Amino acid sequence: MPRPSVILLFGFISFLGMATGRSVQAQEQKIGDRDRERAEIMLGDIHDALRKNYYDPKFHGLDIDERYKAYKEKLKKSESLGDAFRTVAAYLAGLNDSHTFFLPPRRSYRFDYGYEMRMIGDACYITELRPGSDSASKLHVGDQVVSLNGYTVNRKDLWQLQYFLNQLAPAPVTQMALRSPSGEVRKEQINTKYDQGKRLKDLTADGGFNDNYNLMFEEEKLRHVLRQRYLEQGDVMIWKMPIFDIDSDGVDHLMGLARKHKSLILDLRGNPGGYIVTLERMIGNLFDHDINLGVQITRKGEKPMVVKSRKKDIFTGNLTVLVDSASASAAELLARVIQLEHRGTVLGDRSSGSVMEAREYPFKTGVDVVVVYSASITSADLIMSDGKSLEKLGVTPDRIMLPTAQELAAGYDPVLAHAAELAGLKMDAAAAGKLFPFEFAPM
Image: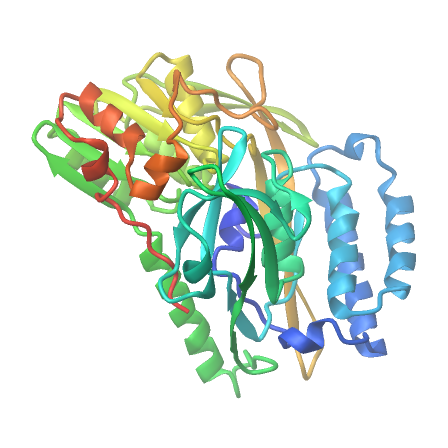
């Protein structure tokens, strides 16, 4: 069965950077007949799911049956398991769809690059460093990443590079060309940290108690990092929303707190999207009338999307929404609705432009050793009330505000500080930068 509809960018799915399958060294060893057979089964399962469920029955003009045959032949030439995974991923990549992609089996090791990078305007910058990591000893927040492993880093291709490094081919070493805030250009070699686990995880009822427990514990750690955070100060509430994954009661509770204040600053920077039901509940709490979100374009036709207002139980105060290049999917839709309905002000950077509706289809192969994998497949395009899709375009803020390399290096947050000023709250960029400190997922 497919998992619930989400409007979700893959960046969240690869957040932890860990999976089950092969060790670092084994991943690039010569592929065996059994692993090649498994890869062919994966490609076949994904091909069938795509044919039955992709929102565009014409597949943007691609002949996916011929494409499947071609990539099945390519699998026969794969020299490693990692190479086979890249071939399966490339089969789907031809659709050029932000929400249709392959999620390979989880590996038996965790890996951590020790740094976070993000597009700010048209340049990519180091934004976070894990204390004690190799990257922390060689990189600096505010460094511009000019190239990574020989690839020029730009807004259009960054997501593909991150998908490659986080899902398909984790790199033991990353080579970076950097430009410091002062303009100095240098090169660094960053060693990836690995934590080797069991070669294969046993998730069966008989033998899998410890492995199931460990996976649940990993999910709990991620859930803590992605928790909803907020600050109430005077007439202002600042809500740091990292993901659209809370239920209606949770949304109503936080909106109930917001109603006690004159202004709400909703920080959606870095938010990759999430569940449609969460998006709809957010909208229902912000408008005193039903909202025509737009039209879903599915393989069965068009379906209007109307979101019901909660009427009297809504937040009616001043609203400011913050977005950046990593704000995606549901986060982008909410920001755009605010603009179209003239409900508030959107500040920050142009958003990701990754706005489709998708479902995740899980698969497994094997009997004694079960290999689990999945594919995200787009089920609908979303045409908004202005007749346009945000896919590949994103949301352009009412006021574009980009922190400088120097402000990143100093830990300042000028965007949040300006939003606070608009709400009548005195807060400088240094103080704003300390409100919601970034948290790495524990290794």
